[in-house]
Image (cartoon, rainbow, N blue to C red):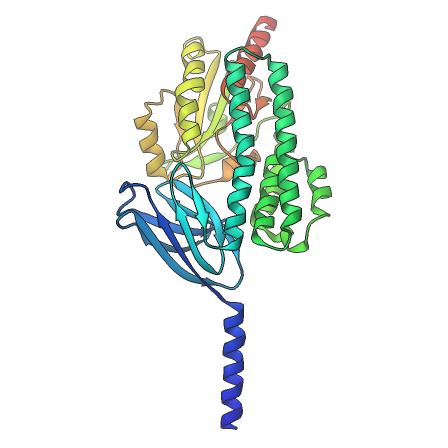
Amino acid sequence: MKNLSSLLLLITCVAFMSCTSSYKLTVHFPNHDFDGKRAYLTNYDTGDTIDSVTVLEKQLVLDGSADTAYFARLLVEGNRLDFVVEEGDIDVEWGADLKISGTPLNEKFNGIVKQLDRYEQQWQDIALARQRNEITDAQAQQREDSRKGDLLNSLYNIFLANKDNALGQWAFTQYVVEGDFSPSQLALVMKKVPKQYLKLRRVERAASNAAAREVTGEGKRYVDFSIRTLEGNDERLSQHAGDGVSFTLVYFWASWCSSCQKEISSALTYLYDTYNDSGLLKIIGVTVWDESAAAQKAVEELAIPWHVMVAGHRTDEPANLYGIAGIPYAVVIAPDGTIALRGLNGDALIEAVEGLMAGYYVAK
């Protein structure tokens, strides 16, 4: 019996070892800026924290094990690194020329990132050409539609080629988020994916966002929400929007979002300076996916002159109600409480707001 028990124990240990893979993540930073800072390894899909470590001497090292390879996100002082946790030594060169190497899926992911980078560059090129008046709004929209169609095709093909690994799950979540699908469109897409994909948190969120976008689309009445402020008071969007007099630009942002800060300093400041004194337009900031202290600090450092709804706790409810998957994001509410426009940024937002108000107040 003793020998049989030992054999069973050995078989159990071997089986367990075969299902668990060890990994070692080493990240090399270009300078000492992150020394002493805490880095957090999180699950890309759920956001759950898996491990953490302090950066020392321009480097961090994390050892661990996982039953299966999964997509992860490393967070360091608001900076993000996406990669695959898989068996082996994962080596990262952090910087402008980011490189992830050492394991098969991460090597493959490097190529995917380079493939997709061109679509980001195309977006910047379109925006710059429009800013310089080299193309019309119609031409810019045509190019953007073409760019987005190509991007979605690329993401879907990456998913098809990697259905059975972590890269496929990542590509599919990117596809459904970038697609801005309606509920009926998304339902058709879901029929073509492995069943386990339907349980992904980001896919579930994409479905709920699609439903929320339909409820809060242009022409629909805005949806009210409330936050508990730093002072412990309840503040509602309805205290600022749909007053029968002014348009209200509701701007969703976070302290860690560099694109938000750039737009606050450019497009949002221009609109505020142009219309605030006239009473034609109010801007209301809403911080989401952020820590209250960091959000309040950003408001002060950016010297934001308009009112910002800063929750006393981290919240995603306002974004969820409007089906917002990424920031910055603007929703413009007309004086009568209907949603006049949503989802525009930069110069496109400025031009749309100017046209909206000119037409409305001339008619009045």
